[in-house]
Amino acid sequence: MPLTFPSTYSRMLVRELALGDTGIQGLLAGTGLHRKDLFSLDHHISLADQHTIIRNGLHISGNPALGLQIGSHMPLSAHGAIGVALAAAPNPLVGFQVMERFGMLRVPVIAVQTAEAGPWFTLRLEAALPMDEVSRFMLEVMVASMLALIELSSPRPGTRPLVELGYPEPPYVERYADYLDAELRFGRAATSLTFARADLEVPNTFADAEVYEQAIALCERLRVRLAGRESWQAKVEGLLQQHPGQIWRIQEVAGALNVSVRSLTRHLAQEGKSYQQLLDQELCRQALVHLSLPGQTVASVANILGYQDVSSFRRAFRRWRGVAPQDWRRNDRADHARLA
Image 1 (cartoon, rainbow, N blue to C red):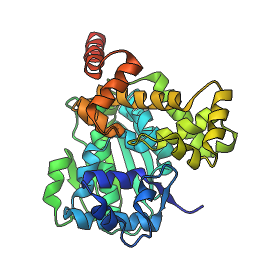
Image 2 (image 1 turned 30 degrees about the vertical axis):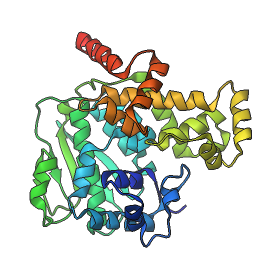
Image 3 (image 1 turned 120 degrees about the vertical axis):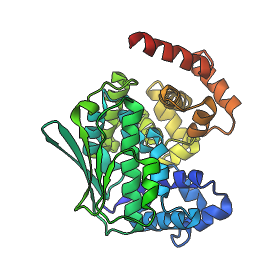
Image 4 (image 1 turned 90 degrees about the vertical axis):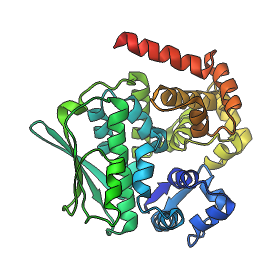
């Protein structure tokens, strides 16, 4: 089976670079893809096209450190079901084990391996590509996002991680300090991150056992490719969780599942569900995850979920939870403070 990437990551480039239609054309130049391909629920991007898109994005941005920039604030939801599992995992150590187990579902050209030696825990990133600006971009995104995961899930003083990079110092090496709070060593045989194990065992402030188990179950289904035997509810939920950041219409979901809207509606009704119910449940879950994270505002969460305006998100959230999003977050933080 050819290696492909979820279109989610290319949509993130569009958002990060604030590209309009002309900019999107430039991003896709040389690929044969069109705007509708990026914003199609069922579209996956070939390795060759993904390579071209990243190279074009670096050129358009004029920022060689774009990978570090994106990785340092990439929302966990961008990683689909894996991201949900990371956000809800008991601690960062378990989260990194999830990445080792399922990471190839999202970035098939970089394998994550873990190793332990005494009090140290290491993640090794093996890139199955020649080292060029695109491979370096991918590694920078992953390194920056892994370090950001530690800060989000259990912020506290600890041992400074060691980051070894499997490539020489780039011309913009001074920019690394802007994004990576770690001891850096370039020109190593491979890229790896080493942490004090104790720092990774600090409980995740936002852990949720039920959400974590649901996300792991979905990752397992994706890995063994049993979509043909799944319920229609599971198929719809899987698509929505693998393609966050967009409010998908039932026509798009039905098309991705190769059925008509009428057939999908009938299949879901036979299982006692409706598409709107499943969409609301997934959007609500994403909203709760992001509202729980530090640094997010109601407006930023609305944008991450794909709402065109904040007022629409507020109305939807009140329908889901019975309170305004800012009130839910205030109560959630008070609950966490009491537990702490």
